[in-house]
Image 1 (spheres, rainbow, N blue to C red):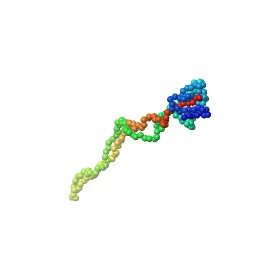
Image 2: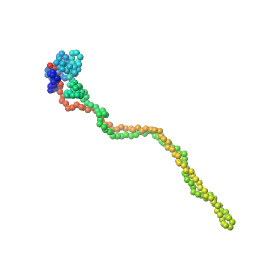
Image 3: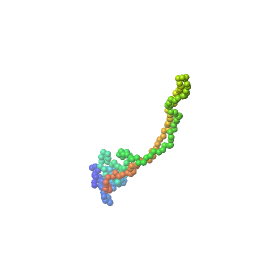
Image 4: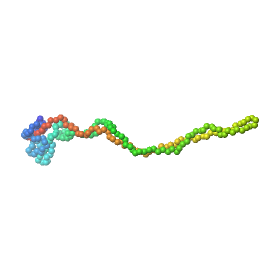
Amino acid sequence: MMESHGITKINRLWFYGIRKPLPWLLCDGATVARIKCEHLFSVVGTSYGVGDHQTIFNLHDFHGRFSLGVGKASPVGVLGENNTVELTTKHLPSHSHSADSLSTLVAGNHSHSYQDPGHDHGGRTGNGQFDAGGYKLGKDGNRNSYTEHSHTISRDTTHITIEPVKENEHQIEGQPTIAGSGKPFSVIPPYQTVIYIIYTD
């Protein structure tokens, strides 16, 4: 396939043979004398390498590359690089990981102390006879003399206090399931290898 550069008849060819035809050169980035390929140098100049800045210049280097049409994002002469890409977390869609096997670690044994000053049961006993004495009152008969009394039991609470324990932390041991392996993947479209040659005369 021939590609013309501007009005000057400089052509680049896709070549499938073993020996390049004359006066064509391989597009392999080699240095060429400016005076030898004056016509070609007048078109491409130092776009693909300045050589020694005086007597030589560089040819296109199409090793492992394919042509891309010029556009806003790709002006003439731009070289793309990566054959493979490695995704990072910012490229991944939103997702979640299963918990797998996680457990909390013991944060030290501890206990809660308490204070119990004792207590009693409040209430009141029933009435009871204090004494029971008999005495005689003349001809009217006998009389009994007794009194009743009771005991009051004070009421109160238990006053038990649970003492606080110092702040502590529990660590989680384990890890979620691993997703992905981080291997680069190819971004090269289907291709057929050829040799690029350029016309120099």
